[in-house]
Length: 95
Image (cartoon, rainbow, N blue to C red; front, side, top):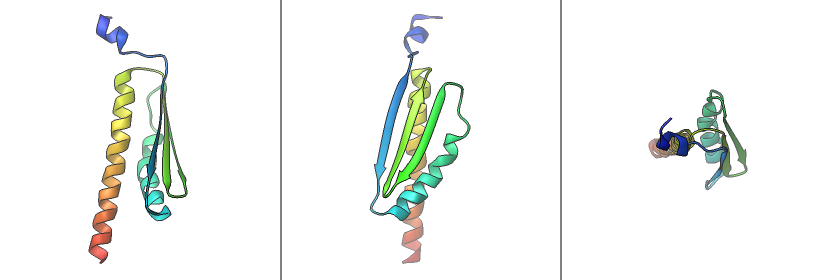
C-alpha cells in the first residue's frame, strides 16, 4: 500500500443530507426515486433515506475509503437532481 492509499482510508465517515421541498408530494417522489440506491451497497457502506413531511433525509455511514463516501454522496445528489428535473418537466407539460 502506498502513502496515498493509506491516507484515503478512514475508520468511519458519516453524513446526514437533508433536502427540503415546497410540498410533501415532491418530497415523496424524490425519496422514492433515490431509495433504490439504498439496497445494493458495498460492504461497510450503509445508506438510509426517509421522508419526513416535506423533507428527504438521507443518512450515510461509510466504514471504508473516502472515495466511496464522496461517490455515494455524489450519486445521491445526482439522483435527487434528476428526479427534481423530471418532476419539473412533467409539471410543465401538464400546464
